[in-house]
Length: 294
Ligand SMILES: Nc1nc2c(ncn2[C@@H]2O[C@H](COP(=O)(O)OP(=O)(O)OP(=O)(O)O)[C@@H](O)[C@H]2O)c(=O)[nH]1
Ligand SMILES: [Mg+2]
Image 1: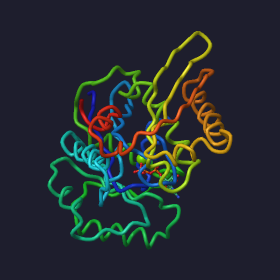
Image 2: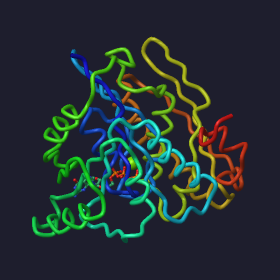
Image 3: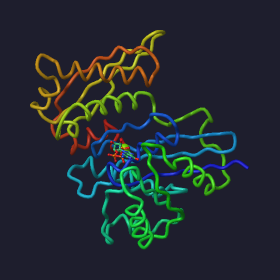
């Protein structure tokens, strides 16, 4: 029997959703940083064997108080996962507190697909604390399974994968078996550069940036990439560029190293910075950057 299904990972920002996705498929597809709101899109990662295909989706963290139109789009990507889930992984971490009237709890109660409670970061909390959390959550929602894990240390992730497989139904392969994602390489290029921006710059800077890949030309020995970093304000542009271009140079080097590792080829990378005021609230920009349908 061949099994398949859509397994959607949701939860608040920073709980470790992308770390789990990467661990489950053993690829570095989703970008990960210590900062909340790292993931901005829905990303599919496909795990296949001869007798199953699981389509995982990583999603942005649910934003409780959206400040920009972009945040509303990010939340809508999360909500779309309620429509197509064969199995939902609701992820929280050991540091998070929820209120009983949190809207996400009602939303979860209403879905028909089975839900697993995945409690992450058990490596930094005592067993008693984890147990308390499990008890609290199981009073709120009836979960099919509860699995404490550490996505970072890959503790219990194999157990989780086995439980996922046990809960999938018979079904066809939706994608060719050797395909690992539905996103084009260009998407991952912009994500990798955005990850380096999140890591290198402070405060609101990374949240004001969007990366667009203008050119991706693959030659025999090298891939030539030209990317534009859009920022919200002129002052942010000068911070990104830095003194005599020192900041953008460092960003370019870090990005290139990561891109070469991801694409397994030599990369020639050109980065430019452009100001696009208010892009996070502008319909046209949100469409251009894939937050809204064209
Ligand atoms: N200690 C510990 N840290 C973890 C674990 N899993 C993830 N992290 C860290 O938590 C931070 C956030 O991880 P992400 O995977 O980016 O979290 P996310 O839920 O995808 O975050 P958003 O994309 O912002 O919604 C990173 O610094 C990870 O290294 C874990 O099991 N234990
Ligand atoms: Mg993420």
